[in-house]
Amino acid sequence: MPRTRRLSDAAHTRVRRTLLAWYDREKRQLPWRGTRDPYRIWVSEVMLQQTTVEAVRRRYEAFLERFPDLPSLARAREDSVLAAWSGLGYYARARNLRRAAREILRRHGGVFPRDPRVLRRLPGFGEYTAAAVASLAFGVRAAAADANITRVVSRLFAVRGLAGSPGHRREVLDHAGRLLPRGRPGAATAALMDLGQAICTARDPDCPRCPVASACAALRSGRPGAYPRKRERPRKARVALAVAFIEDGGRALLVRRRDGFLKGLWEFPCGPSDGESSAAARRGLSRTLSSLGLRRDRVPLGAVKHTVVHRRLEIEVFRGHIRDRGPTSREPNGRWFSARQLESAAIPTLARKIARCAGFLSG
Image 1 (spheres, rainbow, N blue to C red):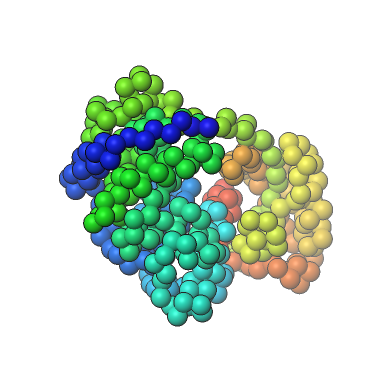
Image 2: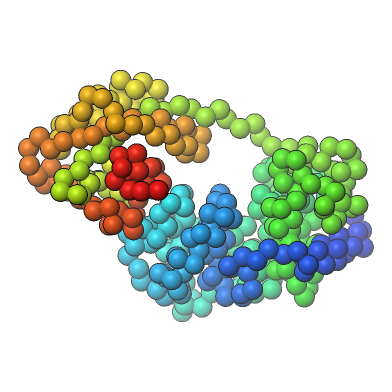
């Protein structure tokens, strides 16, 4: 349990003023900055969950061109939303965006709730997202603590305990809340985010450049990198898979995923795997293809590696062939895609890697 440090309001005020002055000079120019539109802020915050700023920067405007406002997102087909999200990963976020938009339209008359407690009842709105949207869009003094803010606050005030534990989270939110000015809470939240992204990084924090280094308790201790204390990461498990690339008339066969976190997305036919055995993965693929009236070459045309959470996927890509015509008639979830169609389809990043490995997509 962390030991609470009830520092004076004056100490928090000094940090806040210095931080805001730095932010006014150095804030990053990002597509979602300079707006108070809750819809645009919400989309950016959801995209930024477990995704780098640069990856989101590349996809943010394109998503908003397709779904410029809450009604357009609420009325869109799930497949269209997944296609626009393709490549960002963690597709439950896209599904929850659409579900929440529909609920705001239905239960709140299309008006974005301002109260973080109300926002938290919407699909996909956790404590952080609700507080961040309320703070950045509506100027509510709601403390938000993502990984960056948690790291900055933990170091500034030497918050002990394990990151993510209830006690640690409470103390971080207490300090973060006391750093929010009444007039500009959103700016203070954004400043803490920027500081964590650019200077107070997880590894090798650039303390000489930090505007609030003189107030940092972790720096005074001589061990800024020790805060916050984190759980040991589990070792990534190796998983062997085998997939088939089947092309006919300039089109490639994909099947729609029926379950799991990739449910609803298009992927190349794949066999089940028992884990690390490449031979078992190959046999599983052969059984899958046989049920579709297909067969595969004996030698793979290439290999792809991909990391998903705590799994390291090693995928052999085989060229498949039609053994008897009409394989999609046996697989109602099957569909043939041209390269152009595949570019804009709802497919995960791994499927794009496989298509590039097979020479079907460029880049």
